[in-house]
Length: 88
Image (cartoon, rainbow, N blue to C red; front, side, top):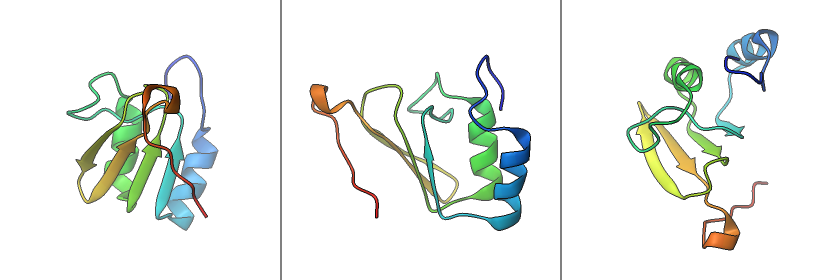
């Protein structure tokens, strides 16, 4: 939602609101103190839903931040020494 490309439709976001979720995996990252170029709409969605954890890529450098009770983890590009994760 928002920006030039819409990765989630409003209908998909509404469905997530109804069902809830613990982990959110994104391409782009939310606006935060450590990611000033992040997306405001993603930050607002995270503030509203408060999942346990959010992972995202796009910016290619690793960091950790908090939005409310949510831990946000920006994943670095593995070629540049970034973190990698495996989700089960």
